[in-house]
Image 1 (tube, one colour):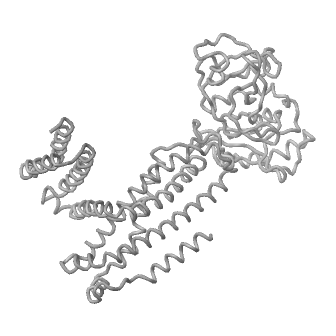
Image 2 (tube, helix red, strand yellow):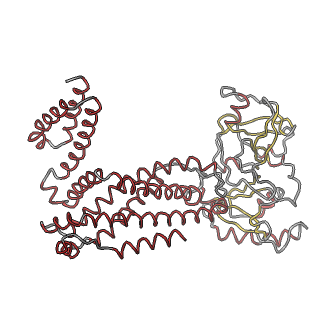
Image 3 (cartoon, rainbow, N blue to C red):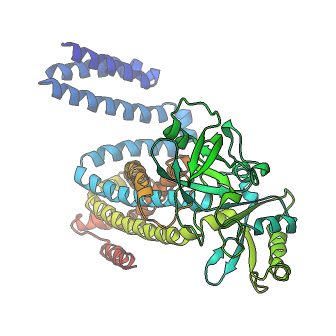
Length: 511
């Protein structure tokens, strides 16, 4: 035997260790001898490789089944697990002998679960998952509910008034939407997304300086403008190894000193009445440097407050609702009938994407239901063609529960393969989401494949396996089986059920 054949035989003997010791002692030597003889008769290298692969799969699946049934006492305590393991093994072997049928169901299921998982991951990232900021549950956005502009920000000078007027917060900050500026003095001139922020904004959103410091209240009225930049901007402008040493760049033709470097920070809001650029900021400048900082008539400042530990959203909302009447007596630009409101920051940042994402989620759930109906129809036809097999098993004493377990095992094997393929398709789909115009996903949402997403897929696959097994199981009653015995297995029942499933598919597709 050549070297490759020797390696295959050693691998086979090693995999035999997966079996219980009593099984190896009884049959191990004979199994290894049979495999060696088959390997010697194999014609060509590819034939030996195929033989080795099939043998390894059979060894592994057989070892799992044998482990479940190894101890009679354990089997007596958990008979259902032992029976299910054997049925899974039988189902796997049976489906491998029907590759076209199996591939059709797996591919159909993979498309449906992949779409459901991908959209579920988007909904989880944009709507369900908490914002990635410290004490995110206490962050509240203060807005003006305008009939014309919807939930609108405030003019920059009103930040000072808000800080003096509200009492439910331990921090109140303001920042503009992403604002494109022109940077020179650090290589070639380029347009860079930036944000004008008040003191405390970067700390509120969890930024930590990698080098230097963050912006302080002293920077608001400083004679020499300063800025904090992101690590990607710093590396592009000065190189990854450059040390922070008071570098100066020109921003919109104004000299600005860089005082700190932080990692990329996704800001929670990136659009307003005056700015609609949706790129994440790479430069943070004091709010006082904004060209509109002195105007009370142009709303560009997003106001976010952090409730005190004992604070509640209800009193905070009532407090800001009284401000228009008070401010209208001081500032002519304030309408006494204006409506100010406080709402959770997570609700505001997901508002624009909530409706399209939920609509898309409803659509893929309908797609999943169509796939379930389609697969159930195929499984029903398959169970009808297995009438003789089921009849023989029933005649030999198989109970209804035993037949049901076998059919559920078939569905579970197919659902597992479809779910695995669906997770792969969802991973591919999530990779292209940033390039799609899918509403306005919150900049703070992190779309990725993680345990939460995989759990969504696994749960969906299990539900599908249970759903598609229901119809064949209901058809597998002893009465139907005995009727098939009497009819000589010449008739195929379940026509009404299959017609109903086809009708449901068409109806769901039209929706």
